[in-house]
Image (cartoon, rainbow, N blue to C red):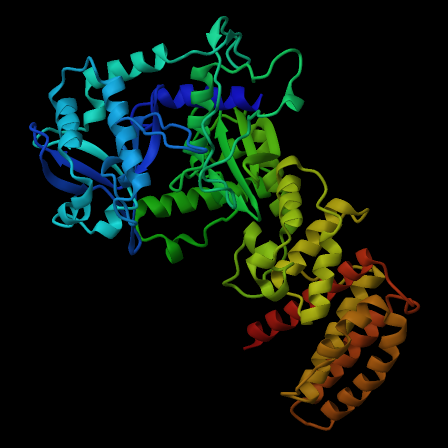
Length: 584
């Protein structure tokens, strides 16, 4: 199913103009420089193909003759490769190993191009025949930095003629013929397309771009031991063309500039639709929504995109259909999400979901609906990004300390609509105990968890003075006692929040009697100050009204009750701040 869906995406993009999807027999590779040759094979220039990426330059993705798989030994690519193959030298100089690579490149030219009568190809052959490996650095330094060129991939171009030599029709025809005559492979039925008597792929192209994976790439289909043999087959029944299609499609989705890739924890997620859909281009932004357009969008196009994303999120969060906001979107189109993680030389399938786009958007909207809670500060995001939520569960709030298991489970819960991971609640409570702080993001996580994972059916977005749940009332009461202390003893080094917040939530029966006794002293002190006398009566009345809502203080409270306690505390604190702002 996964390979079939990737094959379908490849075919769709291949038929889409300007998609950049390479045809069979080619591969998209990182190319940094082009060697500009005269027809006599002399080097005229070294053209820099790199593109700006911030303050750095990054290689350009160029379709070239399909790359060989180099697990070991010396194997040359056709009409492109590293400097060690094209020059017989690299940063280590013209070593014996590099000369062997140079010879392999020459042999590949001779093997593939023995019948090619093309001026461009003849120029490459003459260049290679005349090249002096020992003078590589001296010659290249005339045009570009040897340090940059010696570690890069290079291609060839004929001086004064647009396009690259490997793209010239005679060269392409011979390259395809070479591939066909070297297919000494078994024939069989392709499991992806159903094609009969198709040449089966021996080795599939490595998949690159997965976070934490090997730079040389990994495999999702591989076989190298008799233990994997089943039903008298020692190879996966995937045709050469189908193996090329699914690996090319996946590598394209995983490329650095792909807008259809999302990295969460140690997992890398890619997504695509069965047919063209506007959401395909900004689906990743639904997990990291932009802030207000005026803050982050310097151009009109960016502002329109930002507005579309935020408008769509508001629509699906409020329970409306996505088509109400994007009339041209087809909710019934099949949408695919694939999650990958590194596993030595192979890749693990962490997640696979194939569903309608409408169902996926509905689940994402449900996630944001359950997270929805009054913001502590106006500059905090209305739609909390998943990475910021996960950072609230990590030590020091650092992304590198986020649990990969928790990150993967959270992503799965959002995309499938299943329960949030069971360890989410204790992890959030643990961070609150350690840092003595109930932030907007932590309150949102607690609210979402309680609504989805417990029997609690309703948690308010902001303060609900009529709510009678004892844990919620106890949280509000703690906030009132803290506020009275802050008014009575300004600029104190440590408030009751710093000392007793966690204990009050876990064991209220052991803490609140002492807190109420101290609060009576704080209110009495406020009453002595003519300017604060009115506030003293206000806090006294609030305390009595909240206490009237329950009969006793429990000895202990369960984790779910502690979560509701923290929400009550957060709501009451936010309400104090809101009222203070309005009065000002």
